[in-house]
Image (tube, rainbow, N blue to C red):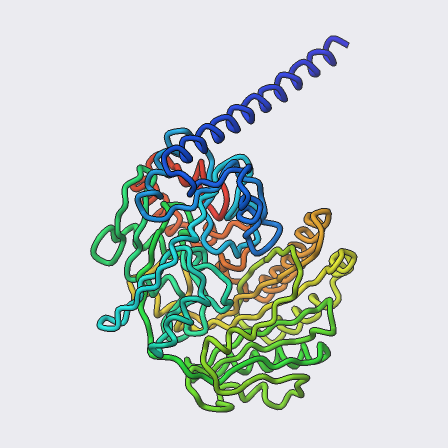
Length: 493
């Protein structure tokens, strides 16, 4: 009994220690919030304020809703600097939210800490003389595109209009323009960023060049970006839209995708994403397709034209109009899982089989509104080459034709969180095993489509991870954005 009593005593002390630490952290956060309210007034939202609940549940997926100790909505760079200094000095955990589209818990929200909501950084300043636009970190792509449409130009940005700027760019950012100009982060010419010590710097090809490189895929590990200056391009009218297919044509769609990707003279103005809701035959297969010129039925999409469609919205329209037609099911909770591989006929048919017959599908279907959707995103070698031509990035991309694959799982209730995550992770693992078996697996994981359990930055390659660590230690020697900003994808230490 003495050993048993000793174990009980030890466990009791451990739990007491944990509760003491948690209580101290909560006290620190409360004190920091009171200090921020005193310093900055009503830009700090407390739980007692009427807009607290709305602000804490602003994130797109309910999986990312949380109960922060307070929410800071800075109006300018100076207020961001003050917030960072207070939180760093107080040793208080915090999270940063741009658009809040990432469904990962804690990525852009927080319990028992401070949420810095960047939504007031909403400027869009177009510089026609230099073909540049400066964008506030709290903007969303739909607003940016709409404001640039009046000038008949656009940017390399998100394909979903409600996505925020900062999360997408700092995670790389796939665009319908990527075959031409690379991913979104490759098209940034300047990052304005507040560092852990509260100072503000610019990172570009001439100043803080190492930080400039690291921010291209480095996520929230280096500071709070307040503004991005990016290239614009004279693209306005396009041909494109959505084609819908019966789910029985999924194998044929994979065959057509392989032919599209295998064209040795792939047209960089053509871009496509294939989706299929394998748990919901009423949605079936979907092609989001666009040709970045106002030319109907371009030859680049010839492999798909013979397949019978259920619905077809393709037409000449603005790029913004084309993107506004994307189908997003009205389901409150989401998780994403990403992997990459080389295109291959046998692998594609195996994926079609796995995603329609895997026993894990029954677990997902057992959830209220349980839905699994696959996404096939063809990536040309030119995407990596464009990044290299613009000074490089942290992503570790190979300059080969490849596929960025994603599984999106949606469901209704918090009770289904673990089931949805684990079942989808298991299906993703089977797809990865199939790609490895055929020698087609690629290490890269696309951050903007990844789940919280995936080691995204660890897959950038060891040399890039080491380089990111060096940049981190230079600009954030105390690792504030690693230790206090727990959410998001971290640099392996």
